[in-house]
Image 1 (tube, helix red, strand yellow):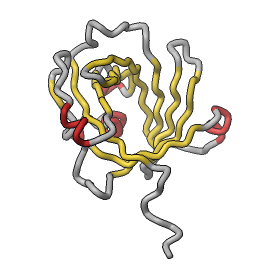
Image 2 (image 1 turned 60 degrees about the horizontal axis):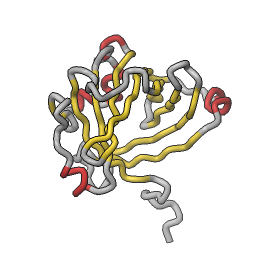
Image 3 (image 1 turned 90 degrees about the vertical axis):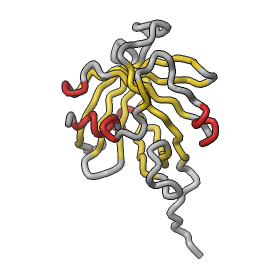
Image 4 (image 1 turned 135 degrees about the horizontal axis):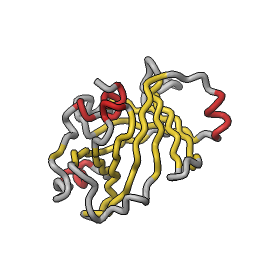
Length: 170
């Protein structure tokens, strides 16, 4: 009997593609966003995320873990994601340190999916960079997504455009 399985039912497969943009699409309202403040916890696969409204009021705090999918370890489109939602005061009591980043997140509906569009504010090395991501529940649906007309190119396979690498500022 294996009472400590490597695969946990509370984790989910995140299927995602990412795209580089030169500017916000004109269909996006520049005032309609949430701000994401991330701390990539040193030496782990953990990220503490504070989601804020434009005025800085915290809406949600999440502790997430994202690891390669053991069924597709070399597929940049697939990760295993686990999320714990925390009260703000509990998150503040965690002694976590790491690499921090800040970005504004917009949403745009296209091709029947919600594309999240992130405009990086910090670190300074990534400031102004605009990336979009889209998630789908199956590999087949993800494969049917086409590069949006407002995107320059797909960067899913380019590790230089991962949030962690961009947060490091290298």
